[in-house]
Image 1 (tube, rainbow, N blue to C red):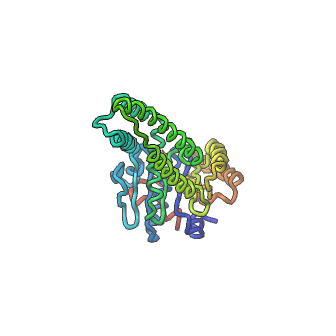
Image 2 (image 1 turned 180 degrees about the vertical axis):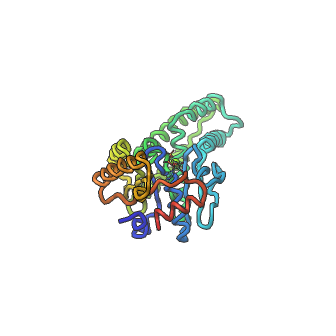
Image 3 (image 1 turned 90 degrees about the horizontal axis):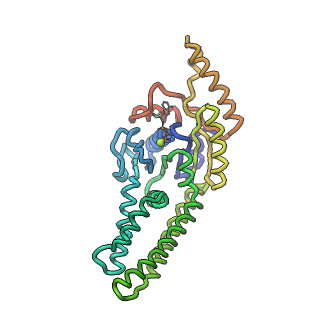
Length: 323
Ligand SMILES: Nc1ncnc2c1ncn2[C@@H]1O[C@H](COP(=O)(O)OP(=O)(O)OP(=O)(O)O)[C@@H](O)[C@H]1O
Ligand SMILES: [Mg+2]
């Protein structure tokens, strides 16, 4: 089966992810796939939480932190600005504290806590995860293409079970902290108020959202995860390790797409030994990729004459990948 067929034969798989080590072509393949699907008349959102703003680079359009930006007919791109999400989070918590206790200003102790908490990676990841949940549960696009950050990091977002646990821990912690604030504030206000139910309601709401998105992202019928590899020794080894790990997290791995394959046609031309040797080396690793990943290797994508930026190059690549 080829790459195109995996889409055509599974029209219910609307959540598409390209994962892999840094710099192999995840953003490039996400954009080309989004372009192809959009040109087939599907309404597509390609999105990322990458602070490097690489969708901005590839589409040559300022997208970062602007919500879904229209690229062409049927195609939208979105880059989530994690920092602003963290700030929004903090403000939400501030507002809740103020509302709950009828205060005009957040007590200094609580402000300090908020500042400290925002420096924690867990807070950033939670904010990002929450933003992704927002995008995914929104549901008005035919396809959602999640342009992932490099492997190690992506595993964090993808391992929904783990994220879920951390969330619950975080929220429980928050609840405990809230109780401390309550005591502190009630001392300030000299009265006791409990908002147990409100907090519990919120917990249940969050739990529902996470369950919904986690169910989507690990559902073989709804989601397809593709690994990007290149014909190089270390990449093959690392990808194999990662795929075992991902499989343990129930990530529905559909296949492997090989990038940066030097066109074999060049061998017919008068080319330098240097290039001839590179092609031979790649042949060896392409064989290795075939024995390692077997029928799950869906396509070999050639190294193009220049980097893939702008719609014309994206279109060119989309045609190569999807015919
Ligand atoms: N087949 C190709 N031919 C030519 N250039 C390519 C090809 N695939 C990718 N590139 C170029 O390689 C660079 C890295 O690609 P890309 O940004 O898609 O990788 P990535 O996996 O998203 O990286 P990161 O891990 O940093 O997110 C880009 O400049 C891109 O244009
Ligand atoms: Mg990228």
